[in-house]
Length: 365
Image (cartoon, rainbow, N blue to C red; front, top):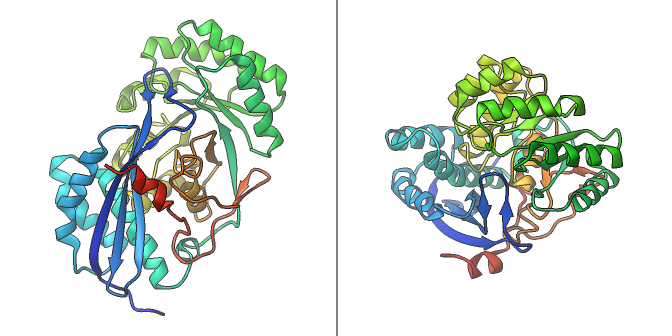
């Protein structure tokens, strides 16, 4: 076994990646680009690990600046990801326990794990311990602005390509229009499980009304019905509705997730490893979810999220967003890991993802 290196240097590349198919929108967002902070951690053995965090088009510079604050404290230390994570989290905790802090940790932590696996000449997923060789995907669309005919065609295509279920946006000004759209989808693609995403757009009374209106549709889940930090509101809502609730893409720490788990307000766990402190943070949350018999259905960075699910016992599927994979966005080089609705993790040493540096550097800021 190769010697575990120490950290020799860390380089950060903040980049603003345009959305090739135009802006994304939902009930509360208008996104024109994705800001990505890429960390390259070079070890004393000359190998480099690559990690990343992301935002929906703003505050990438803030994340990069916090990483710059962390870097001097870790130079020269051994590449032990969990130890480094806890050291750095303690170092920055007093400026915020979640949000920017966990975003900043994500870029570094993913790079540490990548470097450690490369140093040991194994894939990250063999290092962590795979429990399955392939991971199911579900089709997801940023499609609130699309006509119902366009959304129906999306869902038909996802089913034909072997995805396990579909997820579409809701949040039209008139709830009856949402009901009509969902009904037409189910009529066009009968028997195909359907979930919806409300993107934190409802008040508690509006959510209660929407859940009641959707009851007969037997949805797989309703995602982020309330603002993500309204933990008490989600508890109240879950106690009064029938449809399962999914949340987590805007929840950042083990403690926050555990509050949802303990009060029973979350049925599907959508932690985003670019926001929860990287792989170390994600594994902690997955273990806590497993203790409550809850499945992981991660948000974004599908190429790494799906691979990581190969090492986690409690999963449902990974999200494959139309036009929202990091390959489609030009951040990663293309691969052939998707087949018949399943993702097969890379086998190369490290996390196996290749950054498209020409494209990324053309958009750095």
